[in-house]
Length: 365
Image (cartoon, rainbow, N blue to C red; front, side, top):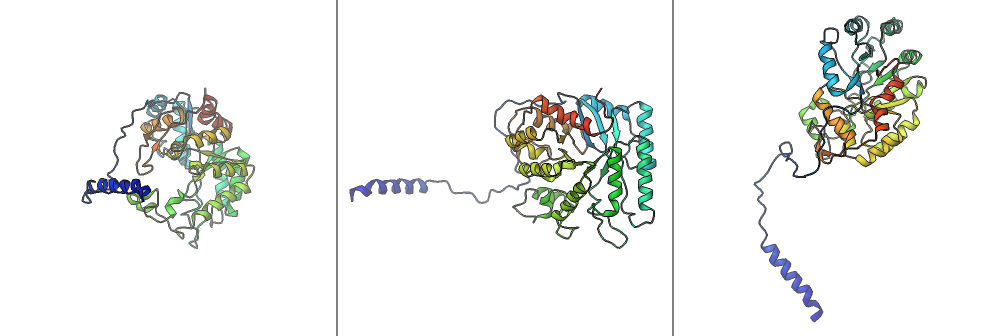
């Protein structure tokens, strides 16, 4: 009987304490979109406005480069310590010629490189292949350094019968073989984040993005399951072992670096770039450090959207050991990030050495 007294006392104290709790005010609510408090964490901060090492941005878009003020672009690049920018939106043919003429006129051939593009929507035309190969040979002759494949090519482009054109369509095979002959890298954006195909509910990390950009939501038949589109791109890699590929956005596996390593082991002709996925790396600094250490020869620096102010976040994630700082687009990443503090030899490969090895004629001096 007396042994139960301590338990009774504990229950009594607990009951009294519960009775004194302040009732929860259920009328207080705030939306997920609005709840974004500044951190009260006091830690060292090292924001960077320029990279510590000259770098190559392998993934940039400048659609009006034929008329663009290239002096202004170079000044912005210099302020970031960007030695070379690769414009993936060369378009090819006369459009590319206009861009190259502007670049050559200003003497920026070593600072601004252009990849070309193709049009696969005309795949049913009798002269599609011969005309496309002729265009690529012309583009090569005027200075194109690679080929960019857009996500629409493999998702949205359709043939005359209304069928989606898979990027591994055998009719396209000679195009990728020619890129291999030219030693051109093929930078390919296939699919989109896998969450775009998942239910738009409380379990989707891209919930806010899909609310603000509802056109990005996909269904299994719009235009096909994510796994199907990815498998087609992976088959393209396997079918062209003599062609070097750069899978944009870390092949959409930045959230699963162990699998990404397996992917790179399986496809030795494929490299990846970090455009638009820096937030994924910043939330797993230790795993990302291990990945960059093991695959330091396979990853390139890329940004995608050219907004000079946004590069600072990339530099901070890659170069510092800062803790718990935000990404610049909350609808992409509502979480905080941590710096990887990559050692200089790995940074050098990421920033320019890997690009220098892959892109023909790329110069850093």
